[in-house]
Image (tube, rainbow, N blue to C red; front, side, top):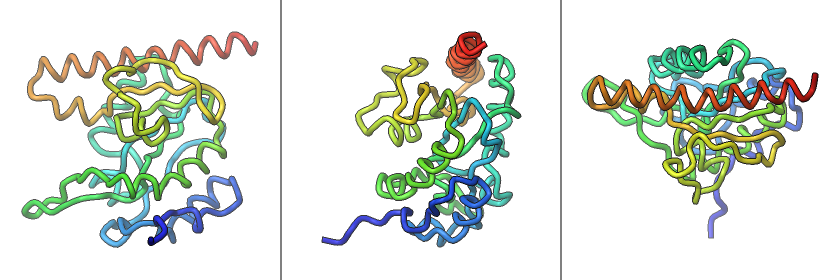
Length: 215
């Protein structure tokens, strides 16, 4: 039986984010790199207390090489600010580092990454977590949640809850901001956005309590 593919051989021992980012350019741990413009590694300080994980880069992120710079990223920034979290102080990344897409006319449409691609890319996410060692991890969407918390994790049942993290600190799962943008009408978008802000507010309060305990 053929061994499952993985990014592990491409991940250096160093936990310098700059070194990891350079090494990720040469990753061939799955086939997504063949159609992507470039790798989209995480961004932010290794001193960040909160690390946000999405599913994968989108079209705009693939072209610019940075995570969360498209419409979903703009909405996430707004929600973080409203929840009392500083977007500039967070580290943001994705469970998968290359854009998975399918053509629709002249457009490139997001395609959910396969479970094998998510597993293959996990060593990069683990390296980022070891480099940053955040106090709190926020998983945005089911793919990111299951990547870290296991395939049996049900976002609908446990969103907004704080659970213990194998990497220290805690994990909170919520919807991906793109789910707000995909809502069918204005009322549904408002409700989805309010729910996202409410979940992020739980994260903000948890970080605040942690700061008070350390002071």
